[in-house]
Image (tube, rainbow, N blue to C red):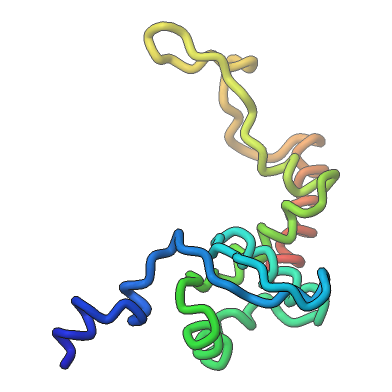
Length: 146
């Protein structure tokens, strides 16, 4: 029986083609049927939106009940971690100071593959005044994440 299900049954979740569109009702356009395909990023953004609108903790996606619901309702959806949801939320705000803090500075690379930096040395030790401004942004980010 398992051999048949795994090889031949086209309705078994692992055998479903992820690119195939499914017909569903769209209430925003009246009661019309619309063909929709599965897109992981769309479902991930919708999941983040639910958590933000309902003011749920980010750890909600790691609980057994949510995982069971997702495995039944949308078996193709890879359930994200709470950190992924926090980063999706941060990405929604375009003028977010957290993204500027985490953005990597762009360095020039010479022909030999050596990174040319605008500073001559890497500073290790006590922070300067500029580092304290970044520390407050980082602490605010940790409050959002946790």
